[in-house]
Length: 283
Image: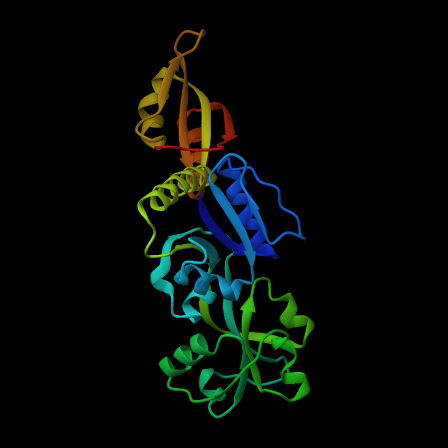
């Protein structure tokens, strides 16, 4: 059995559990339990504080983990990274009181900054040639300026609403983060085999999320113009229709290029375009 550590609550926890379920792994999850076992895969899930996950994986208490890059890099354990997962994206940002003037980062010279990420903040300030007094606190960082603890804060931002509600405005991005899969560097042969199986499933899910299955009808005369627009995995599938001189084309389109390609397909003579989401995609 391989042991996976994830955050016990919050958006990262929800996104991690969603990914595991999309990988076809079934388990029972409740807020009262700190661990659970999958029913159809040799996997045990531990629900931990996000700050503890990198250390637990490095020490072998957990074999693998899903954690934010910000936590991993803050702990200096980025070597454990196996795969970027692309969800739970956020940023570590500097913020000042909304009434303060802020021409650039040099205005923080000699000021006090409250943060839960002193290492990332120090690296950023050093790169900018700025010396500041860093106050390391855990939780409720946004309140620091209003109670006179600090002149600015450096904290994790998703939408920015928390900063605004506390009378702050975001002025600098220190670090961009997303969820990553990490693994102990001394996994045995059997656990490494299970990790590779999980990676295979995760990649199939992620490829599907970035793609759409497209079915369209077109006159045969338009196929030479349409084919280059639909590369698919190798090339589009072309099936003759009952109506003479017409064919149905099936292919996969990348999500990022979707609307641009659809417009070009219509201009090339495609009709009856059907777009279907893909659950899994294995190439």
